[in-house]
Image (cartoon, rainbow, N blue to C red; front, side, top):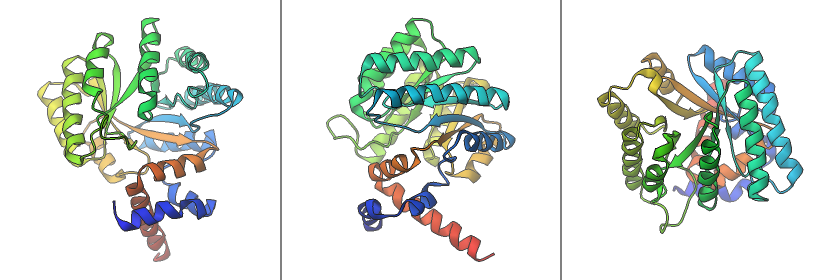
Length: 306
């Protein structure tokens, strides 16, 4: 972590909202559902798929959690009306996991049921390590109840993940595999960059060996290459895997991968909780603060030179 990154994170609470919005606007579709629809439409035109996320984490009131669940009804309706190639992602803390397991389960069941009615799919995001057990428990419960339009996320940063793959293998889960941005203690997570990479590859091998559908979610060029090599070695067809990236990150590489014939899905967050989402992400990953600041400065300078 550079001194610039650390300084930017310390300054975040004092940074005016419009400035934070300038930093984060490239990575968030906007505050409204229509913003997300336009964003996904543009991605579809460019050959990429979307996964829409209604922002809202660590909700503290039951009515907020229910409101987020209800918001997904409108998301699915809009996806269907606009004929978008998109599914959705949900964060369980947004559905009330921090308040009650049963409340979260009820809200998740609602979202999954609405999705099924539209022939669509729900991906459960993985959050910090305190939620991992409940997340995997909910995933298994719903899958065993017959809800097949449901996937989950696993993080190679966590030491437990290869074991989690083995524990889930009987479900042949649809998994988004990512490094994970949550900075966890070394007792439960790899903290070395190369160790996280190596575990990513181990987890990918385990998932592919178990016959799982994998969304390889990384911007790391080495991991993209290693992942595609393993996919090629197994002779997987284009519909048997996908690549995933975040909105606004490595867009040129995204377009190259699409042009090469790979299915690629882009994570598209939106909502009125954009500010808390942005600040939390930057605080959890200080290096991202520097990256966004430099990218934003470059865009501003480029526009000013026109």
